[in-house]
Length: 249
Image (tube, rainbow, N blue to C red; front, side, top):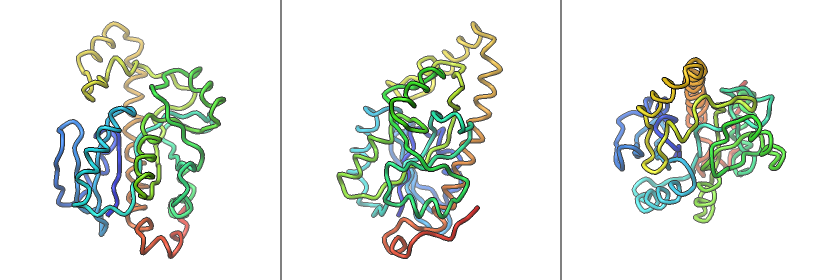
């Protein structure tokens, strides 16, 4: 079985919709969903946004993971772009966690960009903050959970792969501050706060609508490449020894 970790259900929605005979447990805001995609057994779980939430949810998940006999973990979701050549919607395969990168890259081909992914403690909302982190880290994309998730499973001897979709490019200004629309304490969106902000800042409405549209496309693109990884089944021990899948372009 392959486990797939997302921060939020808003990121996993397209993939979860494809799970056959889903079984749900856990919190409503951060559920665990198990079932099958094609012939592959999967369990999708959610860590919440940020390292603190991820640590708590990972321990909660691990105490229950024996029921699923997990072979590999894929860290998935959205990321901010740090490399100006990466448009919103592009897919990044993190080279930081190389155990199955060759197999994943051979399976996905030119649809993914391989490069370093960095984990930050907060959302980078301006082009200036992204450019500064790019200079400091040399990374091509940034998120808030991958390093925490990867380290957790590394300590437990579990193979890990990170695959992220770019939600906002390096030159993009986020139209609404994350602290406005999302409550990290309870890991839930704040729709009324979002509406109030857009009412007071009408010039941000169109950029926000465009951002939401980009997110929708990024989510679908991420689901499609995850489908291909799961279809090849290259991460389970019996298949990993056979080498990467035939290259798909």
